[in-house]
Length: 212
Image (cartoon, rainbow, N blue to C red; front, side):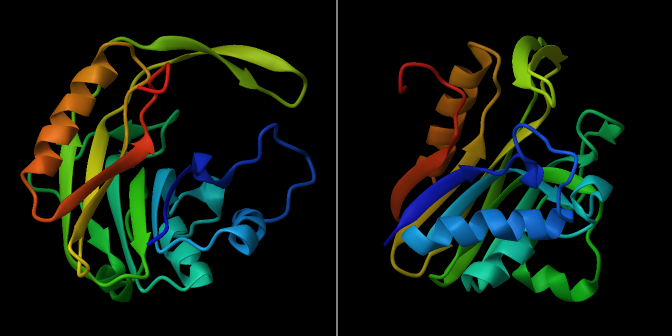
């Protein structure tokens, strides 16, 4: 079983270019290069767009799953709207998990979060919401001309887990970049995963230094 994780950055190129292809083609071009050398059975994705103008109004995990031949996928929105623009927290009781079965209902809401896809049959999907850390952080990011500093406020986070037919339960997450807050989120994610059936694997963008 091959398992891998990829921070998608909503399919954007780093650094950005003026003559980009359409967002969907840019996304597929990246995965075409990747899949030549590594064909995963299970993949965790972070910074995933769903029905966003900036990424071509597509459900990115569905596009990737179809391209890689994965019949099972799920998307867990951590926020509704567009990060860096107008967004809101999920309301109590609001749907916090969309799967390959939901693709039949039409366009999913404009949202952003994490996702998983699997070629191995999934018995059950699980999701855990993680609250955002109050403090933000200054970071240096690539721009069209060099680098620039940007202050980022933290956003709500989530953990998604696939309970697989082969006896494994694999979880994917994207933790806060705020020091200390990400450690707390990691401990909470590990405790939650241990409560689920099967052998466990936790993967994702943990935003932790020193290989922790």
